[in-house]
Length: 215
Image (cartoon, rainbow, N blue to C red; front, side, top):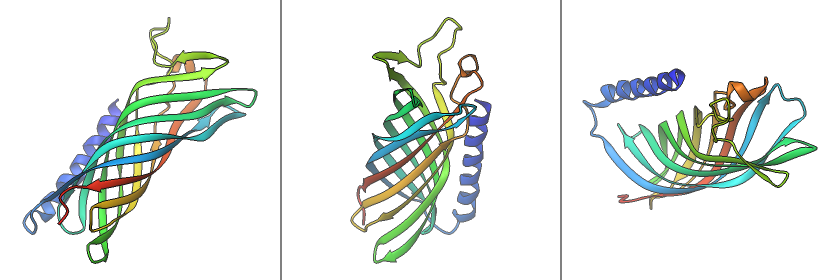
């Protein structure tokens, strides 16, 4: 949790520094919109020889806001609802892991004019996701990964945090097409259940968004 807080503090300080550099030159421009993505999830694995994790499609619904400090630089916070799934386990004993959560990324973004009011944009920054449920469907069983066990802890962390990147094309009409990647920086397995194994979620998304009130 301390690492997560430090990531967020670093992002806030970066944003405040950019705002201080541009405040005297430009007024802030605000944009908002809605988005939907197809999201593919798998895991980076450590200490688990032979383990498999297959990119499997899920979906994301959410909203976004752009805060532009000038014509080129801004931030893009989002609030997303994610349903993710992947095939996880070993070749002879694997199952489908499914999760639902609330994700909050904050990208530091830059954009470049390419045609009339169209833009290409790129963003990088931290994200945090809060899991509402997670389960592993294997051998006709449904294992609740967030259920408190005898050890007093669930099998996985209910919060994950890391860094992401997004690249996209924004039309003057407000329609946006983009692709994004997110990599968790922390092992989501609890120490009492990891048995020396580490799992780091990573996901890639392809989506559409629409921004309201474009000029």
